Image 1 (spheres, helix red, strand yellow):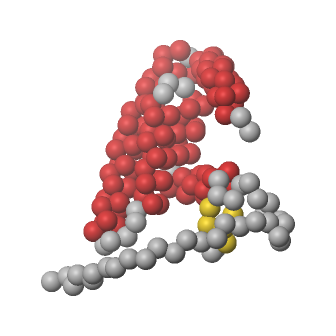
Image 2 (image 1 turned 90 degrees about the horizontal axis):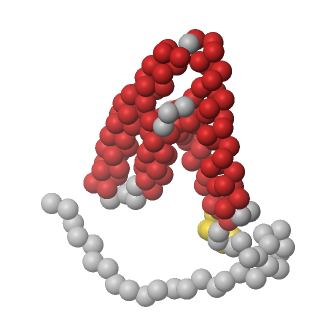
Amino acid sequence: MRTLPILALLFFAVPLIEIYLLIQVGHVIGALPTILLVIATSVLGAYLLKQQGLAALARFQNNLRQGQLPADELKEGIFIVLGGILLMTPGFFTDFLGLFCLLPPTRKLLMKLFAKRLQRQSGVVYNDVYIHSNSRVNEPNAPRPTPTALEGEYIRKDEP
């Protein structure tokens, strides 16, 4: 799937959706309450971005201290920043998408969906099976690259 047509569609569709929703909400609750609501969601977005971002940063640092790779925390951080940006963008549609990125249960769902999409688009190792986008996974005789063994030495340092 090509990225440019999707981005072009989003570039035109999202502002139209936002304008439509702002007009509809403005008709129901009035202009001033609509403007105050948009400002309130931006402030809420900044607060949630700070709160969730600091929590993810703490988990990131904790994993580094324990010698673990903080891959999940990095993915969470990306969605937290994206959600904060979307919440601070004026409009109700982007606020909904931003909340979806910032709330932990929905953020984890988005992370799983995003990981599955990445696995389909590029070659990855999943459950000890190499999958590459140029070979068909369904074909049992699909060519698979041979693994490369690297030789080396290591020194284990005992912690005091």
